[in-house]
Length: 336
Image (cartoon, rainbow, N blue to C red; front, side):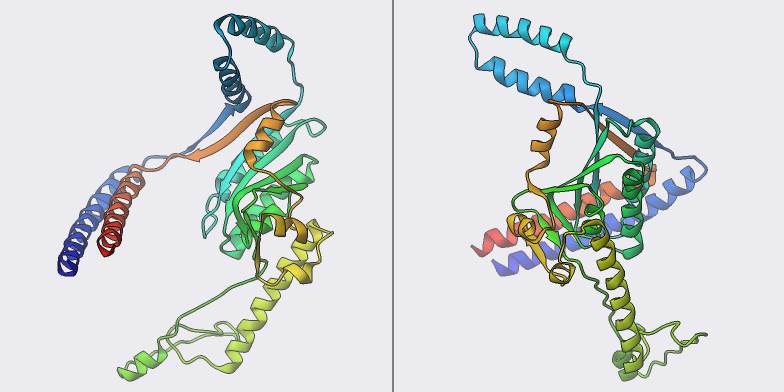
């Protein structure tokens, strides 16, 4: 059985190699053909109030008799005619990656909302999911949210799964942070790691030369021999960034004991509430249902139009992922 599993794994690797080769060749051809075309994005507005209320009405009607259902439908029509909200809640989704490239879409969405929002009536709900990533990327993402606060718009941050590190940096901008019972929050710390191949190169008689101007232009290196002085400077830089992170969180969450939570640890739901990292425990669905009873709710989404070559690459990547996952699942099944 193990031999069969090994042969199957080798077969999958061969197939994946062929797929990658074809993908690269076709990708270059498609990219070359579409290079001169302009690819812009599209801003979409979805009325969540209508879709959510339809679901609620459908549930209520299904539990009534035919006679009661007719009366309920008439009553609903009359209620709709009277129901006029002058307040709006704008919903934005941010699902962040390591490099926070989603910030460009966030920038467009924030700009669109600021162009039409009434600061005295309207508010914003951001559904946030991110484990964090690069400092400059999430710093810019947080700055985009701060534009809303600076204009006086109420901002609620909802975390259903995770807002850690750079994700929590974004979350702390909100007037209110609400998280699901098992959402992960915190990780107020900084991490940097780098491999070093100096001994491997030395063992194989390979020289590596690096020329810099400035004492600390390069503190740690991939291929050269790292020094204690370089390590100390690198550590100082990390501590400095951590200090900026702590100051930023403290500025926006004044009630926090920052030294107690800025240890790099994460907390779940109730523990995060006890620490003061969040203000309430609810899911984003709870917040939406509350919002439709007092305001018109609109989802604002800006989506970049992917190039044909990018769509092709994504499709090929998905195929490879499925092949690998299939092999993993089969190996688990056979092991049992």
